[in-house]
Length: 143
Image (cartoon, rainbow, N blue to C red; front, side, top):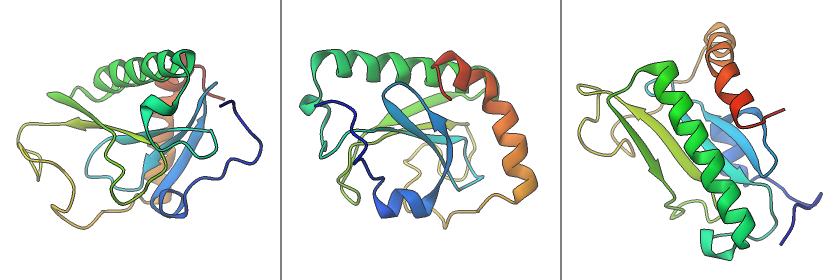
């Protein structure tokens, strides 16, 4: 499969996230929950549910983007652990979660899902987060 202008972000991802830009392969989305630095990579391809459905080059590109995003997020936010997951039980469209975790955060050491309701960003906080992510996003070629 290749990138396609017919790609549409799943409605749940659109409702729960804010766009940070787009890389050569993925939509880059900030989870609208200020509890954790939490970003999704969503390959902008039609009908993809699993990593194995990507071509070999797309798989490599996804891992390059994921690794660069993870490294940049850890540098920017100084976390204790980077969680990367592709669950897709609630949203079948392939998306990779990247969550910076801190010892003592509200869900530590367990998963963040279902621990507490999301705490949405205020507009002024979003501007700050976008500035914090600027260098990270440039590393993965986001526009």
